[in-house]
Length: 301
Image 1 (cartoon, rainbow, N blue to C red):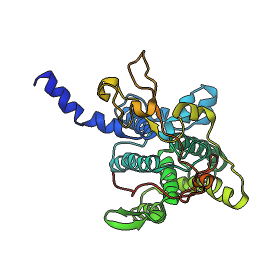
Image 2 (image 1 turned 90 degrees about the vertical axis):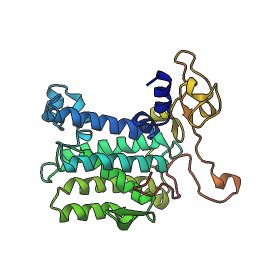
Image 3 (image 1 turned 60 degrees about the vertical axis):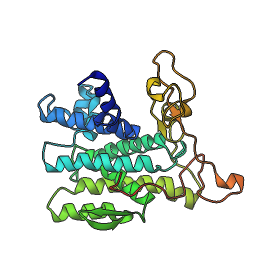
């Protein structure tokens, strides 16, 4: 096949284009989780090197053990495949649908902060309650169900389904929990993920409304890296058609990087606050959370 035809097929789609189309945090989380799980199952790295172990972390300075428990999904079986699919589906839906606004316009930086909060809360609770609760030192499913729970709070009336059975968004985490119990599968990691998710929801949604205080704020370093609103992936200049304004390209990014030949990463501004202009609609705070709904129907692209 001529090289030109091969390039045209590649430009039309394929795994690379699918991967590039994913929201940025979901993209790297899925890649890291998939790579870690595959590496452990093919013997590239020992699974015991990936679990959370504070003693080894402290004595041998194995700092990767803070992150790898959230990436290694398990040995190759049906449950692991389902876990990776749920990670992809739930993370994509929540990140693309508008996370709770904790200072970055309800965008990518806010989602990255939510995951950082969940990681810290999970590790802390493992230290506090791990001695008398059946908490596993692998936290990937905990993090997935954290994301699912906060998605369900943002999208309580959205229609979803499990194996063809219609379920409202607000009941979806508990439907998965019941399914795991009925099938005799592990479920305490689901409970733990839901508990951490409820803590996050309480701090970013309930506390500001009831007590008038914003407790959680996205750190400035995440905003500096990911911007306000949705992150727009840099697009090579050759793919922009000579600098034409296209979504994800120079139209959002502005300046061109003369060293790499890429458009600067785009930054989509936070939604305007209708209260500030006397309009109506969804009010978005500069700090705190997003009062409105949003998101997409779970299980659809």
